[in-house]
Length: 107
Image 1: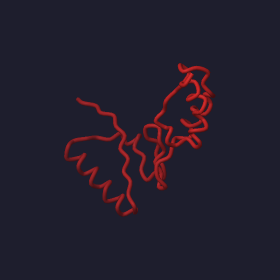
Image 2 (image 1 turned 45 degrees about the vertical axis):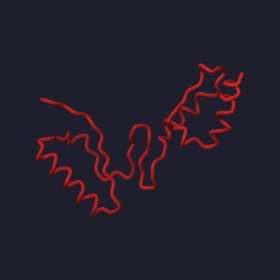
Image 3 (image 1 turned 90 degrees about the vertical axis):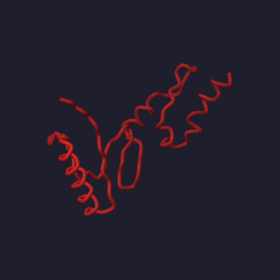
């Protein structure tokens, strides 16, 4: 027996497209003898958390819990206190927030 854990997000412009794609995925899974845990499947979600991001109909946003965790860290006091995060693209006024870091790096 082989077990695989994965997250699959299916998005579509319309309910009809979404239904069509879901049917294709389930049909293909059945053909390949892939089984899903019915207790873990979430269908027709308006948003989905995925690897630190929030996928919504408006687009990709940072997970607010991840942003809060980064914001709560505080300003670095030396170079070893610095944390680099891929979420930086979602942080407003990043240049202002990272000014203390740049000052430390130039010291």
